[in-house]
Image (cartoon, rainbow, N blue to C red):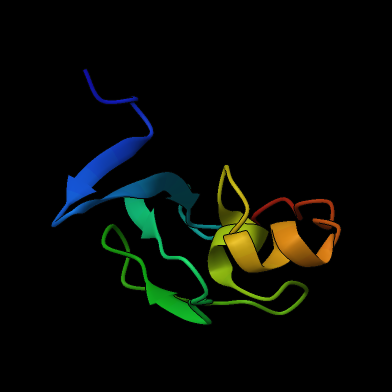
Length: 84
């Protein structure tokens, strides 16, 4: 049985995380790719373009998990700002 946070993609397991839109609170499951930081994401609920401003990527800033890049470098995740 697969771990609930991982999905099989090709020959390897891909980590999954939940990204939360700071504007509308909508959530979406996104892959966390090894060695790749996603700098922006268009929210599927409200269409807002989410950009990383305090972290290396949107998953680290607005997600429930951190990307492998920040995990390896020991980058701290900033406190999340409340949506307005």
